[in-house]
Image (cartoon, rainbow, N blue to C red):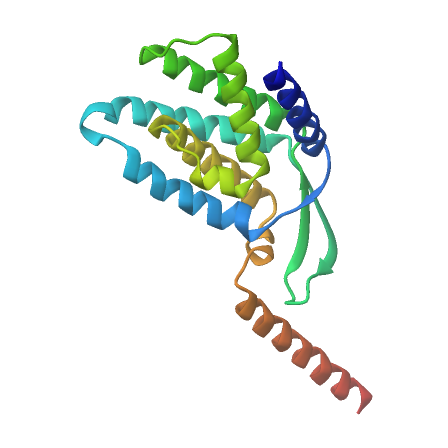
Length: 200
């Protein structure tokens, strides 16, 4: 019973957040994808699972691309204190549907490898996935099977590449602070120089 209650409590903010604008962060666009790639490389048994890995990578990139097709991107011209543009995005229905597909694929692979699956184990896996989405600590430190890392890397790659194509300014939004500060200072100097020239 407690598992169902926890599931409901986690599902509500997850679904609600899918349809709300959130600021794009360096953690989401750079840090977690790199961490996922490292964990994938460490966890794969290359001799035994190479074909399945390739298939999952292709499928994952495709799902990530589909998820990104419905993303709404908002750029109001605002910048943070480092001069980086503040870009917001809303994931929408395709992201949610893709997330469900990924979850179903994960369950399917578990069945393929002989794991006994029932309602309680599926609910438990769903709770863990929602916790991973909500918490960076759970995402990074919870024991995760190799195929989950493969799908995470692949969907992340397809998703990130697609939204970067939609809005190249995202690269600046998640750039290194010091570099963005220097760029901002250079722009300010150029603007001041231009204003001084116009006054003359």
